[in-house]
Length: 202
Image 1 (cartoon, rainbow, N blue to C red):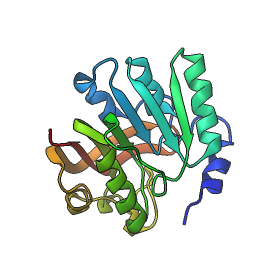
Image 2 (image 1 turned 180 degrees about the vertical axis):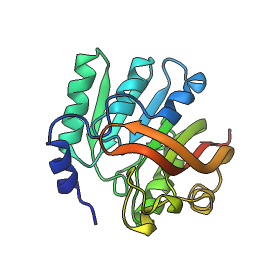
Image 3 (image 1 turned 120 degrees about the horizontal axis):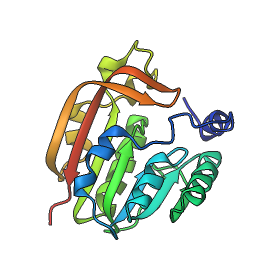
């Protein structure tokens, strides 16, 4: 099982493991964003998604369990003139605030089922009425591909998991299928993913 220390080691290796550009699916949701929105980038690694959201004028908290990753996120934010709050915490154990965020970006955060359920419950709690969750993660069809993703099948996403763990949120989009990734050295090539945009009822 991966640990925060393992990710610290990966992020210490120089460069950005998943690139410096935001995730493509998150970028495609830019029409849903408004300056001043409160946003959380959960499992944000080295900060690529949080920094991009901050540069769109959002008030962003970037959360990851790797202190090394969050340090790199702060450096990227400073270099690009973006205001970014960083939190080093395990998403499954974090004290999620109530009704704080207009947007939560959950991009390639893969957790064991019990931890995933805890983090998802926190996510539901933390979304304001009308708040959006944007999620992309690898699906079981990704197994055996070289384009990235966890080796353990229980860490992967499918439609049923999304519908169960985020029950109560409205489904605006929910798809499974192939995409071509170009996100740093760790996400390259054809990949099988689950993507969704969910909304907290008003």
